[in-house]
Amino acid sequence: MSIEIAGVSKRFGEFVALDDVSVSIPSGRLTALLGPSGGGKSTLLRIIAGLERSDSGRVEIEGIDATDLPPQRRNVGFVFQHYAAFKHMSVRRNVAFGLEIRKRPKHEVAARVDELLKLVHLEQFGDRLPAQLSGGQRQRMALARALAVRPTVLLLDEPFGALDAKVRKELRDWLRRLHDEVHVTTVFVTHDQEEALEVADEIVVINEGRVEQIGSPDDLYDRPANDFVMRFLGPVTQLGDQSVRPHDLRISTGAAGRDDVTGRVARITRIGFEIRVEVATVAGQTVVVTVTRNEFLASGIDVGATVHLRIAPGSPTTAAVTGRPSVLEDLATTAR
Ligand code: ATP
Image (spheres, helix red, strand yellow):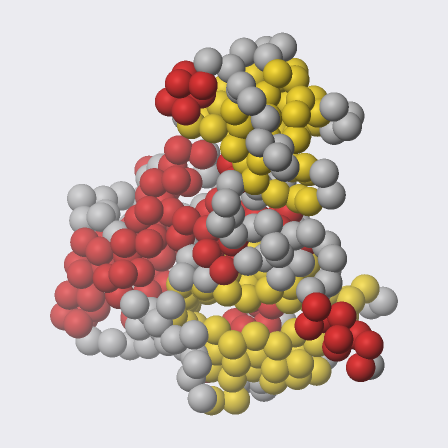
């Protein structure tokens, strides 16, 4: 394990920003700290960086107790949402900065900067000033600068948060490829579940100062530990007394199956490449189903049609989200 957080708590006055957080962040992976605004993600990242001190607990980086180490002795690279570049220095000099203050020989700095500019696809832009770059290019420069000193850990706080959706998406893909190339242990903060699901190897869901769940994107999406994770990671709709993902429902016309829920199509909306069908059931619920465009066209469903709904067999989410404790949990509760 590369970063071990053990029993970390942090208060700001009366406010508990982190409440006894313990997390193991694996070496060489891309880990997302995901959660709603104000949940404590940035605070945890800043504690890992040494920019904030925890009130209690321990932070270990690559087997070294870093709890009391100042940021400059932790060998971490840091990139914030609004990257503070040196405005009057060229892109090259910005990237070289960390190496220059460490008094690395000139030829070594030049070679490393060339390598980094290539890595972040800015080799044509070395002589420009930061103001002459686009937002996305500036964040790539920030990453090159953070990587220059070969940090053990790269910490990114909403690195693409200030950019528009298209550039954000491009940079996400780029970050994934960059990580596959350099394999540096990377922790990034995001409140965007899609970003975390798409980019991260591991996701730590943080809410109200506590860790809700840790796992791979599939673990979290298909086997959410609780209702919060289920709802935070993606759309949920209610069918009877179950919460389910809209794309795990099957919709059909014609004869109803034995356990089907029958309703009438109330609304049809197109969202990107999917079709969202709202069904008003006879029990008075509004259930949302999403289907692909092709499935939709083949089904011939229209507003007002009578349809039947069922949960797709083998759908991974259904067991986890009923809100009822499993038999084992029941036993554990009784034992307590
Ligand atoms: P966001 O996505 O909005 O940045 P976050 O999950 O990163 O949210 P934090 O920035 O870690 O959340 O903040 C957690 C809580 O601690 C927030 O309620 C915030 O107001 C509070 N907080 C953070 N820093 C301070 C501070 N220096 N003084 C007082 N309160 C703070």
